[in-house]
Each structure stands twice: as C-alpha cells, then as structure tokens.
Image 1 (tube, rainbow, N blue to C red):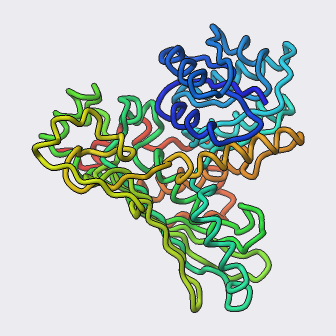
Image 2 (cartoon, one colour):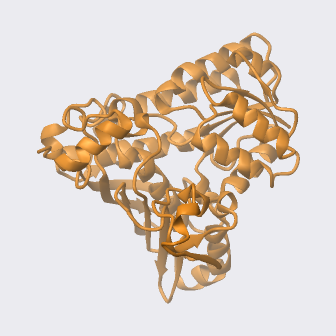
Length: 412
C-alpha cells in the first residue's frame, strides 16, 4: 500500500520510523510546507520506498493508496477538505488516517467525520497508546481473570514531559488548548480502552460524567513565561494555556450497569529523563502497570564526557539531559504503539473497512476532552447523559482555546 504523508514534522518522522517495521506498506509521497525533502530522503535511505515530494495535496492523493494527516491541528479542516475534493476529482484512496486529536472542538471533529463519510472513505484515528504492546498484552493475559473475578474498575493514565517542540503546540488558539488537548486525549483513550471488557469495541462502555481541573503552574511564573516567549514566541501573559490537567471520567457498562472510573493526569513540567507514560488498572484481586521509563537499557554519561553529546533526544523523546544515568528505549516507535497502529490501518484499508479506531471514535475522545475543559471552566461535574449538555458541547470552545483564560488560570 502506497502511503502519503501530509506533514513532515515531529510526529511524521516518528511515524516514518515506525513504518520500517510494517509489512505491506511504503511511504511513497509527502506534502508539507517544510521538512518534506528531509522526510523523503529518510524514507528512501531506510528502504520505505521511492518517496516523492508533491506540490499539492491533490497530487499526493492521486498518487497514493492512503494518506495520513500529520499536520498541525489548526490546518486539519482545510487539509481534509482538500482530500475530499481530490476524491471527488477521481483520486482512488482506500482510506485516510489522522493523528490525534481529531478536532480542536466538537464542531470541528464532527465536520471532519462528515467530510469522510460523504467521501465514503474508511478512516483510522491515530491514538497510539491503545496499540502499545504492553497494554494489549496485559489486557489479553488478564482476560480470563477478569471474566472470573470481574472487570477492571479503575484505570489510571499519566503522560508527562517538559513541553512540546513547536511554538504552535504552546499556543492555545492554534492547538485548541494546552496539555489537556495535547496529551489528555491519550490518557482518556487508553484508560477507557483498559476498562472495556476484553473483546468489546473500544467505545463499548458509555461515558456518564467528567470532573476535571486545569492549572498553569510552571509556565505561568514570570521567569519561565519569559523563557517561553523567547524560545517559542508564545506569550502566556496574553494567551496562556494550562500546563497541568487532571480529572476523572465515569463510564457505565450498558449490559451490567456497573460504573467504572478512568483517572487522567498530564503535565508539561516533567523535568526528568524525558517523556513518561504511566498506566495501571485495578481489578478485584489483580492489577497491571506500565511504565515507559523502565527499560532493559541504561546509559551513564559523566560530566567529562557530556560535551561529546549533541542531542539529548537520542536517548528518549523529550529528554532534557545529556549526562548522568539515562533511560534509553531501543525502539520507541514500537514501544509507544506507532508500529501497531499503522499496521492495523494498512490491513483494515486493504479490506475496505475502518481501522480499530475510526474517526467517529476520535470524535468521542474530542467530546470527552472538551467536557473536561467545560468541567474545569465551570467548576462542576459535567453530566454526559444530559441531552442539553451534549447539545452545548456542539458549540463549546473553551476560554483557553479562545486565548481568554488569563483570569481562569491566574496569570500573575
């Protein structure tokens, strides 16, 4: 299957790295405003196919079997609109992938779903953590236990690092929020997945309520606010976003009526080895735990040798140090689930169907993220079974995403 990438930034490079381990797919095209030549050269040098740089999305679609939308959040609507136009003009695509989050608002996510339904194209929502082998294997091994003892009743997930690479990620008006929009979608999704009875659809459990808090803790302090402005060009005096989010989503089993809980925590101020994914699930008489910083490989670099290290991220995504005892993951792309999510999409599209996670699922995750923002903004639990609440989510844009949250976040 000939895959075309729209976007050539950080996540596109990670996905290209993952494609080295996916059979039956080549990276044969890329369209991006910057970085396209570099990504195409990477694809060719790593045996991913004869990757060409295209000057338009229409040309990329015409010469691809499937395309992956890996461009920034604020460009999604325009890009998907161009894909839909390319299909109308005759591009024979077998499917479209989209990196998380599907939309910055519920309205945006709904429009993206509509465009692909109108184009009659299978979709894949890229939520890599659900595809992590550690998570899937834990749940598979515990399936007979859960059947006998009862399901996982509490799932907790945390994703934390020191902050994004690009300025637009820090800008809530372009990204759609702060750390909750950026990483809360991961944590909510993987916890929901862990709570679902084994073998059921990813959206089997029904969301009942959300209670959440957000805060600006490190990057609102004047010293670090100034550093962020100088480094990323984003002024948190004027348009701040949250760098910490936590909350609880309650789900209900539609068959047994049992309620279960998903707890999420995310931050942009984890100044340790690098990105950390921490997940666990608790059931009656059993449990599982995943920690991405536990690796079979460790490296130590002393002060005298540290000058020779050019890039801290050679060890781990979002690493902030080049010396001391470093956690090193030999294959991050596989660890985080990127390999399996691409493989799932490729095999699904070849059969003419949606991936395990389609864009309708991405829409549900967008709803839960926006309900979390609503809860934090209004200071109350959001009842997701209330039709009026669901209607209000359709038009809701958080104060943070509007760039009007200085008072809410207590900017000094």
